[in-house]
Length: 192
Image 1 (spheres, helix red, strand yellow):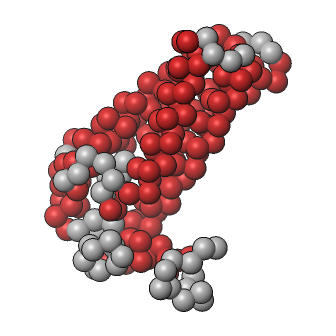
Image 2 (cartoon, one colour):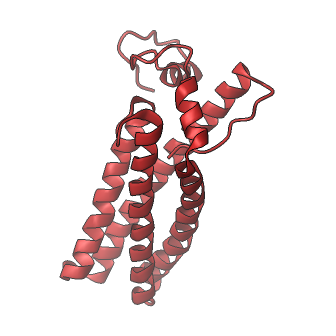
């Protein structure tokens, strides 16, 4: 495990996550957690939270189906057109969740992207978008073999899986923090 500058090596992963959630190193109030009370109110009031809550599992479902189709096409050499269509659909859903997610971030945090609470998730999201876009360029411009194109899709999917895990982890930590601070009030909504 890496060490953040100024942190003792005996600090646990949970303590590091707590520092990240509390915003101790980002200039946010230490008691704020992932959201300040104002941000939480904006998150709960905006319809963009529901949009993100719908698009995130839809994207994950499209990802799983597409992953199976891409893997089958690479393994057997059959079904390339269906695999390609599934990656294009996954990319369209990705673009939709990124556009709506940046709107959500603007409403909740006042920044289109890279708000301190979701900075690293947004950084990795940029890589995910770049890889998906590279795949589209390869397919529509005819670059590479079918196997090379699908391999780029798999790399994009691996990066997406890491990014999805970042968001799930962040939301889990936010839920735990909210339960500690107000056990009678469940955390509503999703992040990005």
